[in-house]
Length: 136
Image: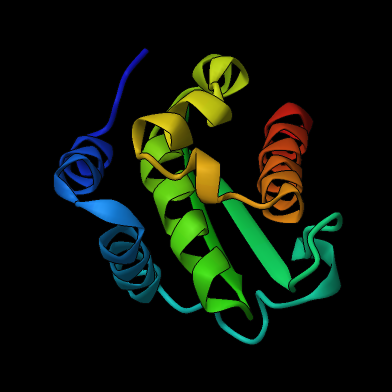
């Protein structure tokens, strides 16, 4: 499966991190990189349900490849969203369907820090991505 360059860069950074504190700091930094959503994009139709925090997801397809934007009111979740987005940006619908989210966060060394509610929230985001992709 195609791994976008930003995802490879994220993986290198997280592999070099020593311990949870460094990973948490990196997670916050990645969250700060998310492009802010407009107020118009923060609407009910873009809201991801199944997350404890407020999460919005916007999807657009260009030349068969998907581009996503996301935001959350929770800082840690913004970091997780940023890492999810760098992994899925530019993938085709078939590649998105094959994505193993648990394996991606395992590679980043974050799977043990994901509480069940955060893990469920990320799966809700991935499910919403799949729904948006299948509608197009």
